[in-house]
Structure formats: C-alpha cells, structure tokens
Length: 309
Image (tube, rainbow, N blue to C red; front, top):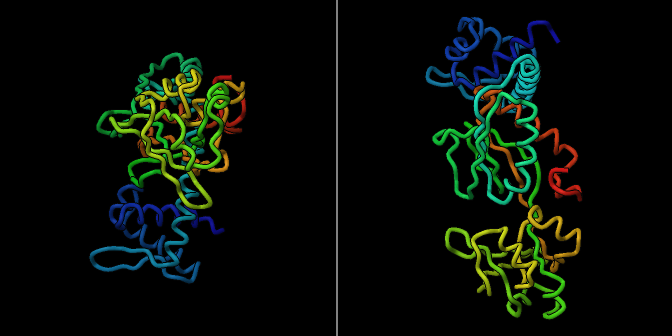
C-alpha cells in the first residue's frame, strides 16, 4: 500500500459520511482540493469510479458501495483501538444511566453493574427498569438493554451480547396431574399462565414444522410480572411461556420442566443500544467493554451456571 493511501481512504469515508467534499474537508481540517485529490488518487489506483459527482450531490457507484462498507468498518475498528488506549489513560466520569427490562435487569444486569462500580469507584449509576420504549437521547440514558430485532437508526449503535429463548414449562407436580402437552394444539386443554403486557395477554408464538402456531389464551391466570409468572409456575398453577434467562436455574434443578421443546420459536437477540461512537462517553464505553468481556464465552443462563457466578 502506498504511504498516502490510508489518508486517502480516511478522506473517502469522511466524504461519504458527510455527503460533500466541503463538509468532509472541514471535519478533517483539510482543503476541499486536498480531499478531492485523495478521491481521485483512490479511483486511479483501483481503476474504477467510486463517486458520481453532480453540481448538487455526491452518490456512490456500485464499486464505491463495496469499498465504502469495508473501509468504513476498518476505520471504525481503528477508532475502537484509539478509544481503548485512551480509556487506559483516562478515567470515566459522571453517572451511568442504564435502562433495562425489569426481570432481565434484576437477574443479570445487577452483577455486571456491581463489577463496573467496583472497577470505577468514582462513578455513580442509575438503573431504570421498564418494558416500554425509551428514547435514549430525549431521556438522557447512556445505554439500553433491548430484546428483539433492532430498528435501524444511524444515531445509535447496537451490539448483540446474548440470546433470549422462550420456552413452555411447568412444575413436575402440575405435569403429574395433567400430563405433558405433545403439540401446541394440546394447550387448549391445559391451565396456562399468561403474561400481561400493556394490559393484554401476550400470545405464545411456537414453531410447528416451519409454520408458526399462536396460542393467545384464555389464560387460567393472567399476571403482569414475569417474576410472578415464574413463581406461579413453580407453585403448580399451570404452564408458563417464559424466557430462559428467568427460569434457567429452575430448569437445572428440576423445579420446572420444559415441554414442547420441539416447538421452540427462534431465539431473540439481546442487544446493547448506545449513542454513535463519535459521541460515546468514556463511562458508556467502559460499561460496554466490561459486559462484552464478562459474557464473551456466553451469557450466564447460556453457560449453565448461575447469574453472577
């Protein structure tokens, strides 16, 4: 690679992100002419046109789309290295504001947050529990734990750190009395414990031979807390449809037994959502790095050991 090519690549990525040569030149502290020459050198070296230029706007060619995605990733990885080195020589400050679904946060975020505060004694933290949609910027949160498929938003980054698997389970006592359902259609003949979300029972989505099966009740017992759904299942009230991160220890000890295993739905990603890297506070980066490090071999409920161990 020629010595100047790295700078040319940085200029190209900046142009695409900014949408113009002038804006990119300002962000890089260069002249518009210097940025334009960087683009021309890259096109000459590659033998293809990377940008379509008109008097009003710039757009990527097909070849430009390909190289932009690769070069953007490289530049972001280099920024991560710079930030990691800076973190070693800087101390995060302020208060980390974290928002998480209630049961997940209680069971699996508290151990991580405890380690985080032990590592950075100068920091404070606020932990908010809610299932509702949260506007991170508007409400001033640093990080959110979100479960489910991400919604594209260029203002935020998402990082999948684990997976949620919904299962159907019941106590051994209940199954001894009522038997185990063998197919989703058997649920109509069982007592079920339904989770209430926004006042409505949350349907059970099962997968039957590549075809979804939806069970929407009625439930024998309807509850607006996943922790109480778990307690009710343990007490023998009926079948529950619940996330594995809530009942992992109960399944391990045999206090609850999974049924309809063959009809499990696809798992859902559990993601960290936080502002774009350009504006990422050190306290946020420190938390993200710690969580990823602790769960790099798998989340607690995926590894078969107790949360926080």
